[in-house]
Amino acid sequence: MARAFKLTFGFIGVLALSLAWYFFAPTQLGGQASYVSTRGVSMEPLIHKGDLVILRKRSHYEIGDIVAYRSSDIHQVVLHRIVGRDGERYIMRGDNTTGPDLEHPVFSDFVGERWIQLNGAGTWLNRAREPKSAALLTGLAVLLAGGSVGATHSRRRRRPKTTTPPLPRRGRPASVSPPLTAALVACGLLGAFAVLLCLAAFSRNTSHQMQVPNLWQEKGLFSYRASAKPGVVYPSGQVETGQPVFLKLVHRLQIGFDYSASSRESLSMTGKASLAATITGDGGQWARHFTLASKQSFSGSSVHLAGTLDLAYLHSLMTQLQTATGVPIDSFELTISPSVKGSGLVAGSPLTTDFVPTYKLLMDANQLAPETMGASGALTDNTPLRTQTQAGTKNEPSHLALRLFRPTVSQARVLALVLLAISAGLVALFLASLKLRPDLDEPAEIERRFGDLLVPIGSAQAGWTDPVEVESIEALVHLAERYDRAILHLIDGGLVHHYLVEEEGTIYRYVAFENVLVGSAAYEAAARAQAAAASQAQRSAAGYEQNAGWPER
Image (cartoon, rainbow, N blue to C red; front, side, top):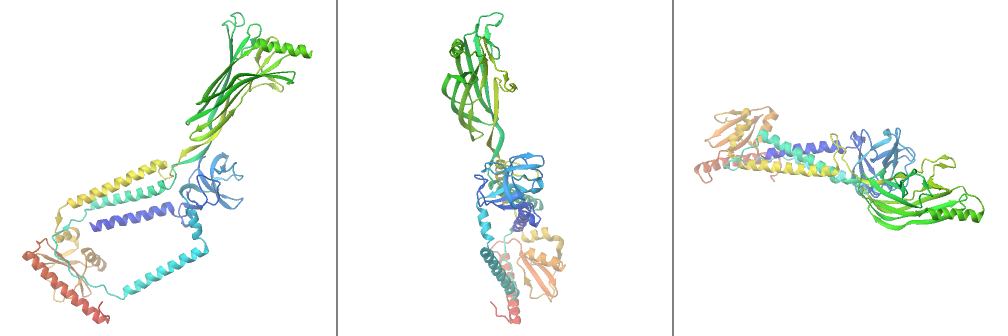
């Protein structure tokens, strides 16, 4: 099982290094990542001065992406957000700037999109680049390298001491079968992927601010109506918006204005609204103001304003003005002016509005009707319905730009934690299954694993003295494969199994025991055999030290 763990962790290590190289290797070394240490405040509050941003190249970029580009104006890399396009060129702007960048880069100017952001790490990176820090790191590397060389030189002077045969064992757990080993490796790979996904997901914010040109819309609808005697002019007895209002038939006119705000995102608003009218004459030299609906508070996304115009009173004003001035006036202009001032939230971001459209009607001695002609020709904007769109910012979910799919950061976090839990649970299940498996004799296990390398022999040869004891059967198999030798298998008394490899007169041996009960006669016989082998190994080691001229340590 230890070998299976080593194999599993080895695979995990290799995979982790491979994935780390694939995701984080800089482009200067053939990788796909670029590193930018921010120096300004143009992207606050999302990105601060001194943050380290890891970029990844993409095949295309969209409005709202935070992208770094090489500026030919200032000869530096600029990290800003894409807010629009002009043909092949991109319009960039910082979140904390008042207007777009003067430079409009093309696709080839882009370094990459923001992938991972490490707050404050850019400051440490800049410090490491300073001459003093670089010299300190170089000196530390030299010291470590020197210590390593010295340790290697010291090790080369010594011959590894031989090891004595192991104590008799009751048995050892069966080694991991190839399918189970493969399953453990798969769990390790899954866990490594989950760890990397965690690093990528938890190092990024789950959302980012995005500028939207048409985030929400305001709508205002003017209306007027009145009751009249049914007849040829008004068959239904009602005057509707857009119809002329004849002063002989209608004396009071109801004026209305309906305001509403809407968005595909969540929107809430509070504010105050009012409705007024102004009548002007003599080319604007004379004017009179009327309040139709006094200022009122509203909450929500809509408000209704209404008031009444006394047409008889307006007609008398016209007559009085002409009598007083002695100047005939063909018509007067009546302007309906609502005012809506509000504030609130749209898509989680603040909004403000000051909506003040106007609706104009012409009034003469006989009628009141919507104005259709202006000084420069026909009016096209004097309609009852008025709309205007407003820009704003909204929180957009951040995504991870993986090669096969682009999950949101929130989804990636959940997926990473689920994969970690699954891999940990499967490993725990496999380990529990190993504990429940029956123990096998070590010789039987060796036969099962390395039976094709074993050559049974009946007795030891006379020249096989002073064997070098190895610590494990795996080490002996490694020697056999290295020297292209078979492993000789000798059974002593039916209990002690000797595994031997001969190379140029040197015998390498590993000793294993069948299951024996501690304290039994078989155990005592095995212990005596072990003691004899240990004594012989010690004599061999002492003779080697003496011949080499080095004192025994």
